[in-house]
Image 1 (cartoon, each protein chain N blue to C red):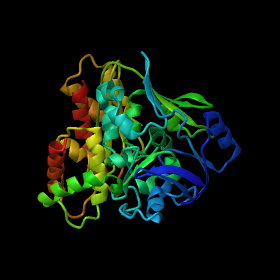
Image 2 (image 1 turned 90 degrees about the vertical axis):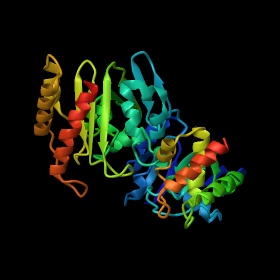
Image 3 (image 1 turned 120 degrees about the vertical axis):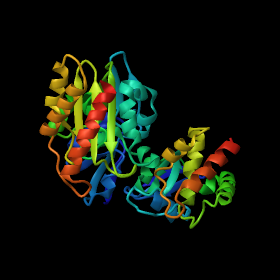
Image 4 (image 1 turned 180 degrees about the vertical axis):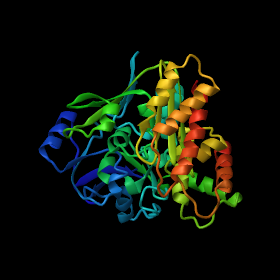
Length: 262
Length: 150
């Protein structure tokens, strides 16, 4: 990959104007994946130094700047405590510390990679993406549609919730991509997201509804929820794992995850 | 484009291409302790410290580290000599190709987690692949070094 021009704007407004002006411009996150691509980049807009690398909280929300690195997510006390620190653990499970010091949450979300360990976790939290021009876009809407126009992700906003959460990343080695990701939260309702199917994260909506409507959560309720998830979540094969193996993983890890947070 | 940064405690002004990666910049300026391994963000042998954080120099655009402090093993000579003693004592050294990156990552670990456990060390060093040693002796050497030099 060649980069012909690197532009470091001094404000988000300037970056946005450049993005509108040049159809061939791209926004840089950590550029870890971009550099492995085959396509040259005519203009790369870098958002360093624009204050997008902080994590803040109010009484209601946690706001994560788009340029916050995975290592910051892993070590930040706010992220380490919210919903059992599941986002911190997911970030800390990705590659080595050298990668996590470069990769950004903004790049992870905008890339919408099917193997993402971050997106399933954000999907089971109450997550909104904050764009410079379009404003707030719910994560599920972003994942189901393409952006209608070029825009700049400035922050990821998570509504604070009381409850419990867990994430299971199943991979052959600690440095490898996930064979499957299972993320579960139990707040005022249940949320279940399955990632690396190997397609991108999908919500187990029937299983979630079953748990929400249950009078009590016992072994039978969980067994039924797992069955419903197995029916509704589409799994397939790739070079890393077969569909049958992924089904076995989903069955075992979803049951364990539900028991952890019930 | 011209960029200024501190490399091993010396301020340098360098002329770099917009898409040039720090690994190439450093090696082009004869800092050859920084190795080219996988060149695809996986193996860790190109690790350098940018403002004391370990990063893969193969994946960092040089222009993005303007104004920052870059450290390679040439900039932490005393620590490297101390660590080398512990590594030698444990028989944790073989071909040596990954040693500079390992030493830099341990140096960063020492500053980030002053009293690490063996698990902390294992987790922090996951991104430093070594084709020879099998890691166990390395980790014991590092634990002893950090305990005794704290």
